[in-house]
Length: 85
Image (cartoon, rainbow, N blue to C red; front, side, top):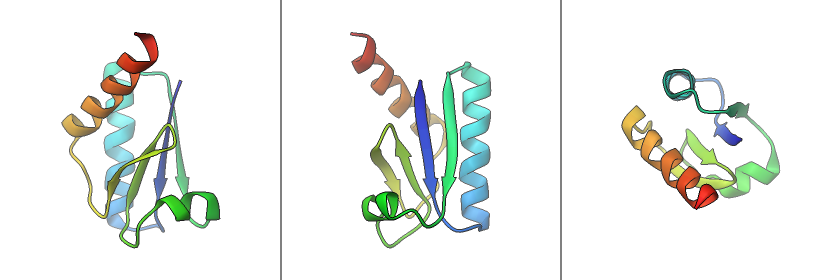
């Protein structure tokens, strides 16, 4: 299972990133859990000073911007490839 965490206070950029992730998971039928994290020290250490931060399986993939759905798909596919091969 893929674990996606979005580190960010409630803002438009965070909502946009969360919506992109939900659409991607639904469209490609990934088994994934999406969580929004606002103040968890474990994740804010991984996050930079800019939000939103996208963490997939405990690795920071994006910081301070909203990546495209295509970018996120590439990252997830790479993680799945590494996991299965």
